Image 1 (cartoon, rainbow, N blue to C red):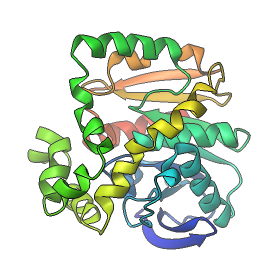
Image 2: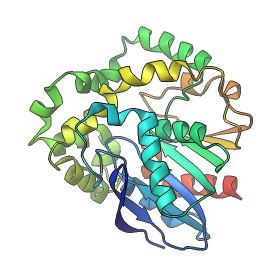
Image 3: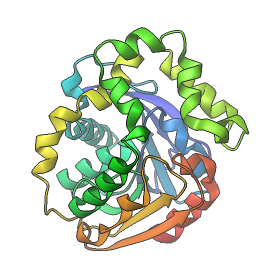
Amino acid sequence: MTMKTKKITVARGTFNVRDRENADGFPVVMLHGWPESSYCWEGVASDLDPNLRVIAPDLRGLGDSERTLDVKAYQKAELAKDVIEIIDALKIQDFFLVGHDWGGIVAQELAFLIPDRVKKFVILNIPILTNIKGAEEVTKAMIAIRYIPYWYQYFQMMPGLPEAMIKGKEREWVSFFFGKKGQDGTIPREAIDEYVRCYSIDNTPATAASYYRSMALDAPHWAGLAGKRFPMPSLYIYGNEDSVIIPANIMHLEDCFDSIKIEQVKAAHFLQEEKPREVAELMNRFFK
């Protein structure tokens, strides 16, 4: 069952949305990360239970959604409010929620905003905002390697630098992050082509960088989340070959959830594209 794309305009803006459109299916809202778009869920969706209705929006500033130049719009709680307006416009009340990378952070914000509507929660390869002990373990590990895996984050925080250096080099920039798995076809060529196309849309180097530039605005809010727990049944699927989200990130998760199950997949950061069938099977078991 393939997903169809459509534009939805709400009070907060215009967003591109992929929707399996099986109206009787229970909704699963799937949020992508950087530098991807909602296209990243196509492989998973093809093996996901056909009785589930997959809804995957392009987040603000990425995919085919609107490019907003105000960095404040990229605070992750604000992006979560975008998603709430989208699902409200689709007349969806209760749903399962899935998030990868920055989509996983936005999903956490959304789960805190409307916890009663999120019936089950899946997170892939992103830190848990309330995992204080895990963050301390990550800090120790990153100090030992001088935070080198985070270089692209600091690069994008530099004023004007991504805008000056990425334009005209979108294929080189995007392809770099998919590494050997992109070169050897493990991650389909057509997926990378799609992300290059989207990154070539005017102002994308700036709007994509805003995910990182807004972190200074996010930080006080995140500090205020300390001690909060996710009440809904949750699943963390970890691609254990990731160089940025390291094993320390999944330590102490029991402190953050009332109910958490952890599954590991032999894959790097973009695990839902490297192993879509395996990821879909884990979700199918969890959602049942």
